[in-house]
Length: 166
Image: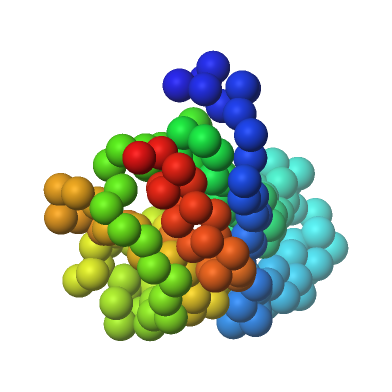
């Protein structure tokens, strides 16, 4: 599979990050609330190890959120997604397995239980923000939703490749 990704023509590529204000607000709430107690510990002469642990535990969430992103690619072999920090390699959806594809608007919380790699009433979803994506229906009856900030272009790229592979 790694060799397939090296020799490819990319027809669509997208990188998405968490951009909801409430996600970032929650991530920075901890550091803001712990700032004064941390200053108090520093002034009271607390151990450097304790301070380092508090610092790491306080600031890891914003850094972690910044590092997470969803990459989506369409090439001549299929549709590939990689949820950075959770996937070590690309997850491939081969064109031979795909029945149809449609651009859609969905309700992330109602249909999939939120954002991320989610399993919901409507199947599996890879999404990080927004409520638009591409629903891929497979020949075996399952489906996958891939969130996209340009869902119509993603749908078109998949649809065009799907028609040229048969």
